[in-house]
Amino acid sequence: MRLTYIYHSGFAIEAENFTIIIDYYQDSISETHGVVVDRLLHRPQKLYVLVSHGHADHFNPEILKWRKNRHDITYIFSKDVEKSLKMDSTDVIFIDKDEQYVDDILQIDAFGSTDLGISFRIKADNKVIFHAGDLNNWHWNEESTEEEIKDAEDFYLRELDHIAALTPFVDVAMFPVDPRLGKDYMKGAGQFMERIPTGLFIPMHFDVAYEKAAAIEVVAEKCKAEVFVPLHRGDVIEI
Image (cartoon, rainbow, N blue to C red; front, side, top):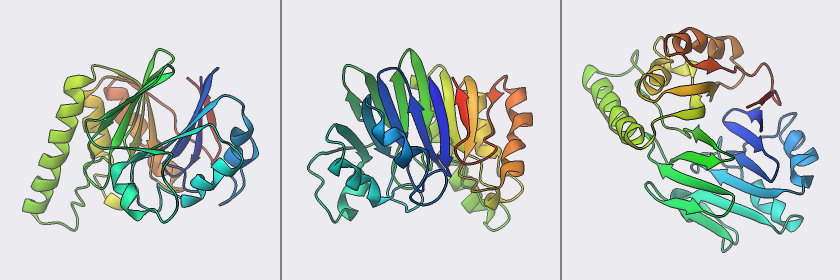
């Protein structure tokens, strides 16, 4: 199985009989050019396109135009996206927290978020893969009051405990490590790995702050998790 970091929170997962594209925002080279448009959309295997929520940096409506050339795409979107769509969405599957999509290739379970939308747990090819969407401990410690920080953390830990109760292990986790949060920007990621044993942790939502993202290696080592920090858009790892 191959995982490609597209950009920001966008990833592609390729296996022998399927391709999954998650939270496409821009392609790996430019807004419209790169690994997705140039290669993955032409890959003959079954194609799934997932969107965790409707924020512009996670959902690019251009993805719905892909069906003009690919008639076999399975679109699975967070329920919140449905209200914002201004084009035909009759072939889109909308799911909400605690709902599930299953077919003969994969199983997708929707968990909560601490922002808009959902997070995804994907079971396929004997692997458990988690994409957090915008689930994180969005504490903004240097800007918030103590009460706001506590409320944000309590909200996050409730969501995290719910996931952990149903997820004893993940092979791969893609999770926000966003330096804009300030000095504690890795806190949510650390709490995730402390509660859910993780084989491979991949930071996301860091734009081009690769060095800041790489600092998660110290946190992951304490949790006995391996780390893949993309070095550039389009970077690849075999999982």
